[in-house]
Each structure stands twice: as structure tokens, then as C-alpha cells.
Image (cartoon, rainbow over all chains, first blue to last red; front, side, top):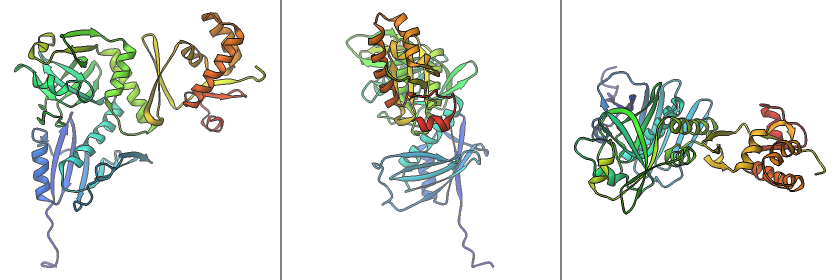
Length: 271
Length: 107
């Protein structure tokens, strides 16, 4: 019956991080614009996406990000709940839904969680670390807030490609590990380059009076990697997978402690 | 020791020897533990079929300079501590491997 049906526009954008494409659907053109701006460089022209989420926007009172995050799984369906969003996701069906207000921070949190769950199945992980490509190899710089991730990113020379200053994306391949650029930013507030390279080394950052690189024994490397790894679920399978991913990584990739003076000379030792 | 105790590795724990150290991780709270040498020996020998006394005699007294009496007492304390953290299962009867129902009851 023409004239009685309301035409609702549907918009979508595919965001591909680490070669994992996720389609976000919305009926809000302004929110679509927010997504395009937030994930600039990671918006994929591909029509296919491995996963798809319908985003239902709610009014701003739904915005308390201080409420504890809960990530639970029941019968293969994940529920991600925080004060500012609630998402449900069925990985087998490839579909999910997100309820949040029109802000980029909530969707960012949902994407990080979804990617950690995807990666956990594959032996990969997200890591609190800066990362950069130099001479065709990727280098990870891990540490808690204040350890120097932003500083080492800011000091990167022109021939280094910054993948992220905050959250590194690591996937397992048959012959090792590959780091991908991410749009997950830290203090530098600069999106990483959407590129990838085999991981050559992981550096545990510390600032000190001189530049120094020291080997780290396997157990300490494993502890530090786990301490900096992002995983949100207390699900037994996910925790075990994260643990095994960390142990396998330190078996394959050299881990060093990098103590550095905050100036550009530190990059003379890297690459 | 008046009673026999059997110990088994909890199936809820992921464990890996990295270099000289044994790391174990519990899904509960995503807690990571590093076992010391004695705890590592106990963990590795905890098959649910061998009594704690036998483990102490065969593995601990032979590797560490300690009297059997002290070793048993320390091993009981250690097993109790590891059980509190969900790392080991402790029972007065043998613990069938990978029997989640019985292991849940024992917990």
C-alpha cells in the first residue's frame, strides 16, 4: 500500500582489522559517518564480511562505561555487557547485535572484544603494545600504561611503519606470527597503518638511564606476555587458549627487555 | 600420616613448562601461578592414582634433602594450598582421570 509504508534507509560499513572483516549495520546516517571517520583506513570495500552486527542506537543515558564489563558464553552465543553497551553475538551464524548510544568508544570496545574471541580460536591475540614494521619485519613493544609505548611510537624513524601505539594485533601462521595494524589508539591518537608483517621480536619496555637490550627467559616472557594480553572472558576454554597462545608465542618469537632513554637513538638498535 | 591422600591435576587448569619454571593458569579470575620446584614435582606426579605418600617417597625425598616426616607434612600443606587455588584435586579415594562428575564432587 504505497504511502502507508515508511521507508527506512539502511546503511552499512565493513571494517577489516587483521584480515577479519566485520560489517556494521545502522539506520543512522550520522553514526555511519562516525564509523567512517573512526575507522578510516580500515574500511573495506569488500562486500563480504565474516561477521555482521546490527547496531541499535539508544539515547545518551545508556552511557555508563564505568560499570564492570561482563563477557559470557551460553550455548555458543556470546553476551558482552557493560554500562554503555550490550552486544549479543553468535559466531557460528556470523551475526550479532549491539545496543549502544551513538559514540565511537562503545563500538570500539565491542570490536576489541570480538576480535580477541576470534583470535583466541586461532592462536592469536591482542596485546597492550605498540608495534611497527621496519625492514619488512614487525616489532612489538609491550608494557603497561607509562612504560613507553607512546614514547617509542613517537620516536619511530621515517622508515618505520607504525601499526599501533596501543593495541597490537597478532595472528598465528604456520611459519610464525604476523602483526597487523589496528585503529585502536593510545595517547598518540593516531590510527595505525593498515599493513602487516611477520613478527621478528617482542620487546618488554622499561625506561632507564641508557639504551640496553637484554634477553628474557621463557617463563618471564610468558608471564609478561600474559600480563599484557587482552582477554575479557572468564570462559575456561578462552582462558586456556590465551594461555597456550602466550606459551606458543614465546616458544617461537624472541623476547627481550628493552630499557631506553627517551630519544631517537633507541631505534638504532631495532630492525 | 593417618589417611591416604590422592592428588590429581585439575582439568580446569592450563599448564606449561617454560624453561625451568612451570606456569599454571586458572580460568577462575584468569589467575597465573608459577610453581616452585617442589610444587612442580607434585603437580607432575599428581595422576589421581598414586598416593601423596608414595609421591613424597619416590619423587620428593629422592630429589630434595628432607626427612620423610617433614616432607610428608610439607607436601600435605602444599597439596592443600594448591587445592585451595583450584590447581590440584585432593581426595581420600583414587581420582579417575578426566571424570568431570566425580572431580566436581571432590571439589
